[in-house]
Length: 223
Length: 263
Image (cartoon, rainbow over all chains, first blue to last red; front, side):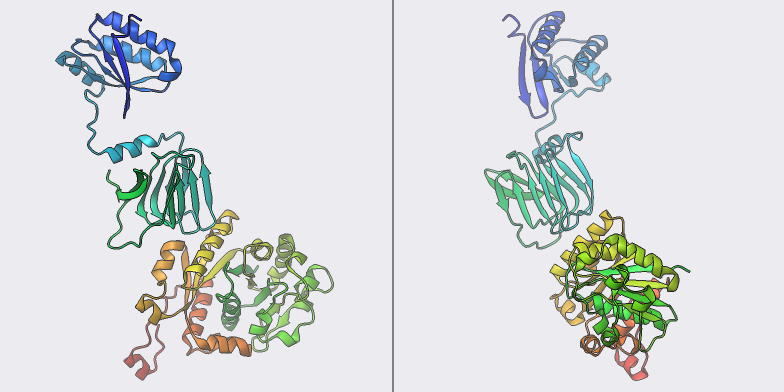
């Protein structure tokens, strides 16, 4: 395969990072198009960051690429470049010019873990006896009272007090998290782990619970 | 004027539904309202006992529904208040003897006769409860300041919302101020925080309530009793009056010396 050195694709936290090699722009484009064409399922719905190296690109070239990609269901969101011209072009098009810093990983993961269209939105309060079951993430606007139960395949976000039973990642997803403005569930489960919340002391603050090395831990929810 | 149908429910048993029905009914009747109480607890009736009317029962709710008597014949007039009536439950039958639509029909027949219809719901969330709320315009949920009663009240409030009978109004019964102060009992705020519905009454714990129930003389008529005052206030709020909630502290020295009713 000739085009292998021209294009490198790897998965990053924010989607796919495509690194282009040294070659004339039309050749790189053709190689990228070939990749997309041969693996449509892999690229479908992807968020793409493009590292173009030292290649200097103008608005017309970049916007044409962006449009081509979006026709195939791919979102171009960032262009990385050593060329100041390309950087300026990307900024003009409203694209990011660097990958977000991996500084606050919790927050990033939480927002990434919740694709809005897959989430089930529920207006609270969920009272005793209520049960919400959903394959994807669940978002509750309001309290979850004791005696209420949420079973979600993905993460669970409660914009309110969480005092019922909650099971995130019920299908075994260990990356699922549970966050709430007040996290004091009767019982909390993520994937196969079960925890009972300790007695609260001090003031309540928004918290995120996640699995770290097979243990359930809660930490402040910072946005 | 057509009557308003108010059902008193709780989910959990023993929190004071029947006592509340009897006392609120007496308080309404004492304010000149025409009131009919319906005991919805078929098979485990006791509203008649609390109201002191047990020995006057001839016909009951099931007799009316099954057409063995006319509605008027089953309405037992109270001993003291001429415009207070009780329709007792049948003791020898069970909840399945009545359907929700039977209750709606009964209440529709009763509406022109009185100003208020108070229905005493059985504990639980099954058939008897469904019967009791079928005709309700408003539902009062009675709870005690303990975790299990509040949990059940929460469940009932949820069901009422789902059945479009909400929003329910909350009665917190048997509040013991000393225990709340020691932190051994849920406070009114804790309960409201969880249930998130409007409050219509706070009734302090008072052993005289039990004595009065056993005697079949609801204590609401005793104006000095604070539990009685609390029930009076619920009746006034139902009638649309704005009434401040009782201060649950024991009356201060000056109030006692001056013999003033604490508000």
